[in-house]
Length: 343
Image 1 (cartoon, rainbow, N blue to C red):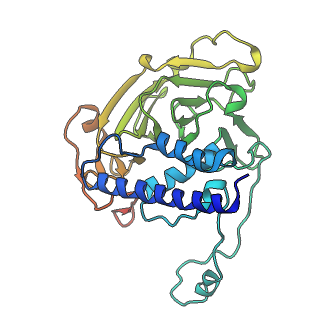
Image 2: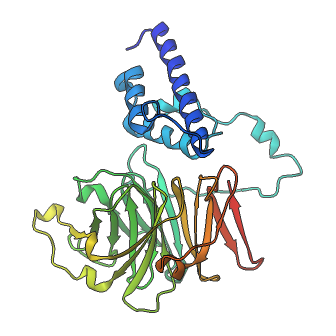
Image 3: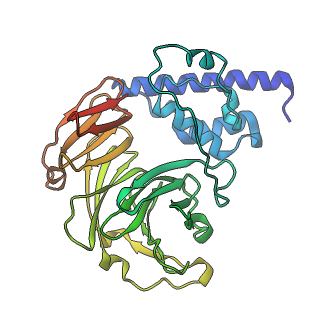
């Protein structure tokens, strides 16, 4: 254990590390040059933090902290977050609830727990499937769950596939194939939740280039056994992946029964790849009312793209919008016919 004076010094060094990292990322977004030797990437941030605090800090907490300051350069951070602790809100929030300018008040909430979700795990994706009346969730550490009235379907990804411990970063539902799709930092998962057995219901597509950050389904396909998937990665690329029922009719891979999965080579899939942003693609979405896809990034120069999916496929120029300090989220309102972005 660190002595108190040493610990205080470590905190000061950690604060300098955070400030330097945020400053570099700010300069990078402004297009300013940074020497390669001086640039603090995740590996350098991780190594320095481990050197300061030793084994007391866990890998997932360091990764979560680094992602937080990377996504939002103005985010309020506390040193205790690196140890997995978070400061609660003060009483000022309760007093604000009494103000007349509050628009929405949540009077009641219900918590749904699941015994499969592990400690210190978080939900990374929630997708409502209206026509089937259920909800799909994905947790960061690999639990895919379908909640319906009976809450009877779940698939624990790491339990079946110990070789890949990458975090799940998002999920969606494939309406034509009637499967759940999820992405990790390195692979694409397709889960046939309808399969009664636990051995022949999950497919892993790999290898995938770059780190996958978000996923959505393109709902324009009129082919009864084909779906298109949009995926955003950490290098600014948007991938359009076409999957059909034929892809998942292959024989199982050889191996032990308790760990059998079907691993499919990504080269057997039709994948269109376009670099649309200069930073992480934090969200992709297909807007069926407009027959358009959208993608956004914290990149100031190419913050938001909105255009026809055919222009993405045909490698044609797409409509892009520049927003200072980037776009973190967006949605479309059909009634008002407006697209709203949040940065």
